Length: 263
Image (cartoon, rainbow, N blue to C red; front, top):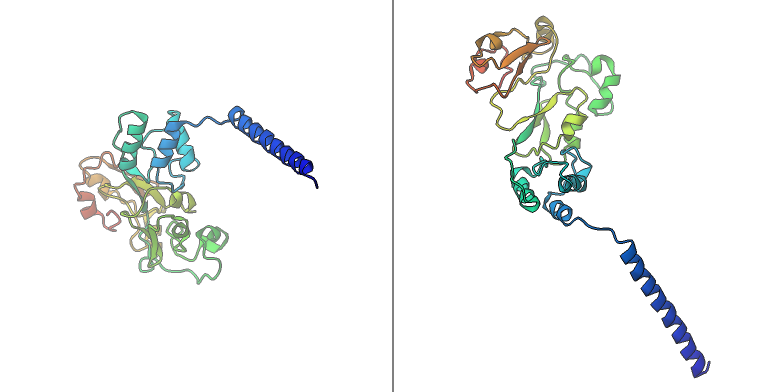
């Protein structure tokens, strides 16, 4: 190949490269996606767990909603007040103090308080037990099944099975709500971290039937209702329920409860 041929090839290749470069540069300008700087800043302030506890599809979804004014700056349950204040500064708004929440398992029916109807051998997933007799081997059909589906779902290792029931470490819990969503018996709820008293039972059976299935179950006797000076307790479906906003934490219900299910 002579010098002219080499030069022509070099010019051709260079020209093609220049054309492609100019084309890509123009395309980048034409099709450029505008980035919301506040959204990016909010996203960087979020913890990045993508747990969905805020009700949005991951941290990116929440960041977009906050930037659009569709979500509160302290909507992230994992980040809490600290992250809420950072995001408030980014958005140029005042941060409102959020109430720290934590998961509570409304059941005390461990292996010492209940008894098994039979020995279960099979898939250790609480959701599968709806297909077996009595909804599981435990005597209480409302209590914790103890196979740890919530444990596997928790991204923060805040739940463990202790003596047959799920127990939440409230210091580790970040209130993402995944355990609430996955529990087939709906025994887990989000309550204020500083809740003064909680009823740790979910049975809706009449008292006489509850006694037969669990030593420490709520029997709906109403003694707590009669003795509560703040009127914060009601019995619904043979089950005591505490209104946390009315509860003053006097402790009378704890003292009077004959089954010791209020803690």
